[in-house]
Structures are given as structure tokens and as C-alpha cells.
Image 1 (cartoon, rainbow, N blue to C red):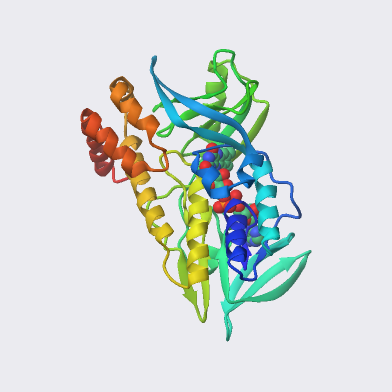
Image 2 (image 1 turned 90 degrees about the vertical axis):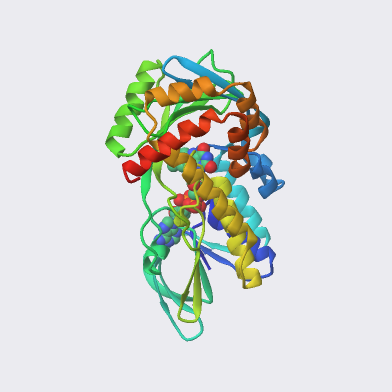
Length: 373
Ligand SMILES: Cc1cc2nc3c(=O)[nH]c(=O)nc-3n(C[C@H](O)[C@H](O)[C@H](O)COP(=O)(O)OP(=O)(O)OC[C@H]3O[C@@H](n4cnc5c(N)ncnc54)[C@H](O)[C@@H]3O)c2cc1C
């Protein structure tokens, strides 16, 4: 049984059902009207999803432009990033899961669980009525504030606010180029402008405090002369250490996938590709009743992103200026030619070709340690 019929839950459902198990997905929303959300993912997405990927891809990104304090650097991607629309992705994933044999129950909210003789007793509310279901194993794919995780004894995970405004794409911004601005006075993360077509793009920010984040993005939009046509936002998890994805409750097992397990690259706060990897790992663990190599690889990957984030988190304006200046040709090549989901390889390439970046990184890490982050 899977709680949560969004990206990670539906992907898990398809994989487990394809392995020949009976799968039921419980989703609290009344039906399929997934909110629009413009998302950027690496081309791993295509390998993960196969033919279903095509339906949700609305644009391709071939270049990143990085800005800070009047400076800029460009990084060309050898394998384009993909822009996907969530309201197209979710129905495609649901169709794949159903075709594999999974059933979907809408308007069904998970409330709690308890061990019973053979497995788990699952309390739900469906159509306004409380009831009980039984499952041998349960997967929590119910997002950053996972009720499955809390009911099973996992500690809460830290979240940060992410806001983005859909805007008309400025004339000087090519539709295949993502812009990133480092403005450490506003956020230790960054602003981005991701074109979804030649007409529209998503301008966003990750912050630390909800109200400040809203104020910052409104000011930034004004400064850039852009008007918000539509707002998208939610709190997303910050990965700080590996969340073990499996727990035994009586004779039953509970697993977590996606945002529920903080499977989000904390350097870029992307959770689709990593959530799918977590889903694949959990599906393998359920089907083979053992450990999954995919989960070990994902753990290493998320750990590297945490290291990068810790380094950048304490950068001041002069450090970002230095960073953008240091992005010389050799380093830019290594950033572009390696997929951003292979962050360990990317880090080594950067270190090998531009050792001065290591000193800058060490400084950020030491500042982080001094501030106990
Ligand atoms: C504005 C925005 C932009 C983003 N941009 C990017 C991006 O560019 N690239 C990227 O990779 N990631 C991005 N992310 C992050 C990405 O969207 C998430 O990591 C991903 O959607 C998480 O999927 P999930 O299935 O784990 O959880 P969710 O999508 O949160 O799904 C959880 C599901 O569980 C259901 N549910 C919750 N509680 C219960 C319950 N008690 N019972 C039954 N059902 C329940 C919910 O209704 C929901 O359908 C962005 C996020 C936001 C908010």
C-alpha cells in the first residue's frame, strides 16, 4: 500500500506493480487536478521514465548563465536539462501505474497505523468516513510533512520555503538558457529564471523564512521589471543526513520515498529525479526483500550535494564574485559535460581543473563549521 499519489508514490506504484505485487495507492485529494508547477530536471529523467517522459517535457535548457554583483559566467550543458510541467507528469505516471495493475483511491486520507497479527492495520478517512485497511507493507510518499513518517516514529525533517512566479520571458533571455543569480543578502540559496517556452518562464527563490522570501522575490521581480502572472510555491525538505527508508512495525514494514524521506538535492533543491531514484530503491527492496544498490548510490549523491550546500551556505558577496570569476573555461567545461545528477564525479573534475575553487570551498565549509550549520 502506498500513501501519496504524486511523483514519488506513483512511480513506486508502477515499479512494484510491474514486479507482480498487488498495489493500492491512497491519495487524500478528491481527484486528478495536479497543481501546475514548472520544474527543471536533468536528462536522467528521460532514462527513468522512458516513453512517459515525453508527455511532460515542455522545453530543453542548453545553457546556464550565472550572475552576481554585475559579473556573469556561462556554462553550456552537453546534455540539455529538461523543463517539465507537473500537471502533465502526474497523469502520465498514474496511467503507467494503473496499466501495471495498481489501483488508485482518491479522497482517502491516511490517519495512522498500528501493528496487527500479519502486518499493519491502517486507519484512513475516505469520503468523510473513518475505516481500517490491512497491508503487509506501507510506503509513505506523502511529502515533506509525511504523516506516515510521524506515525511510524521517524523524526520530522527540516523544510525551507520555495516560491516561484510565472512571468513573461524578458526579450534578452533565450528560451534555452536558465539564469541564476546569487544574492547572498537576500538568500543563502539563489534566484533562478527557467524558461518554459519563448514566451514564459518561472522566476523563483529558495529562502529560509516564508515572509522574507516573499518580500525578496517581490522586490527582485520589481527590480527586473517583471510581473507575476501566477504564483507557485510550497515548503520543501532540506537534506542534512540520510533518512533510513525502512522500519519494521510489528510484523509489517514501512518505507519512505521522495520528499517524505528528504530525497532532495539540497544544492539545487530538486526532488524529482532523486525522488524517483528513492522510489526505485524502495521498489527493489520490496520486490527482492533485501537491500538496494540504488539506495546506496542515492545516499552518496545526496551526501555530495549536502557538502556543496554547506560550502555555499556561508558564501558572502565577495566569495560569489570570486567564484564566478574563477569559472574559467576549463571548469565550465567540466560543469557542462557531466550531468548534475553525477555530482561526485563533477566535484572531482572541478577540483582537478580549478584547485583554487577548493580553497574557496574550504573557506565556506570552515565558516559553516564555525556557525554550526
Ligand atoms: C514551486 C516548486 C518548484 C519546484 N521545482 C523543482 C524543480 O525545478 N526540480 C525538481 O526536481 N524539483 C522541484 N521541486 C520539488 C519537487 O516538486 C518535489 O521534490 C516533488 O514533487 C516531491 O514529490 P513527492 O511525490 O515526494 O511529494 P509530493 O509531491 O508532496 O506528494 C505528496 C502526495 O501525498 C498526498 N498526501 C499527503 N498527505 C496525505 C495523507 N495523509 N493521506 C493520503 N495522501 C496524502 C498529497 O496530496 C500529495 O499528492 C519544486 C517544488 C516546488 C514547491
